[in-house]
Length: 195
Image (cartoon, one colour):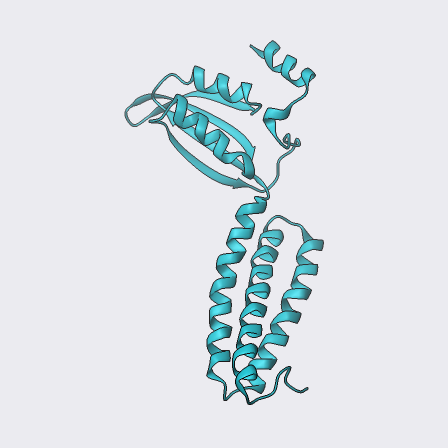
């Protein structure tokens, strides 16, 4: 198999490292998403991404191996790997797959916070508990990852001193609404009757 570009010349010395760099960004970004899909049990997507990830990697490494005298291809390979990790995480944050459980612990009365979470369309479980310093309220809510900032905004607005933890949820029995604030009339009436 011959190199994509000639071994010598300014074009080969500059263009080949650029191609290797961008190939690595693409394959590592795909690899990051593949790992996320595997952790979410999305087997089909993980397999498809794995195919393209390995194909692009083989193309990139073959160009590096065929141009061992071009040090820029080594640097491009490594820089592409680093940049691909960064880009992969950015893409993952953007698509925000999955659900989270937000656990909120507060010494302050959480009635107002739980009511606002309900009004925003989030399911909430509120328990009385005892912490190291005395009685506390423990609030659980499950939300889509893309809605996490909405939940945290409500927590910070109505109970800014609350302690909270966030964990990934592997499986949620009932489907969460895609956007809790865009519920229909019947859902809003059901929320009102809950009070």
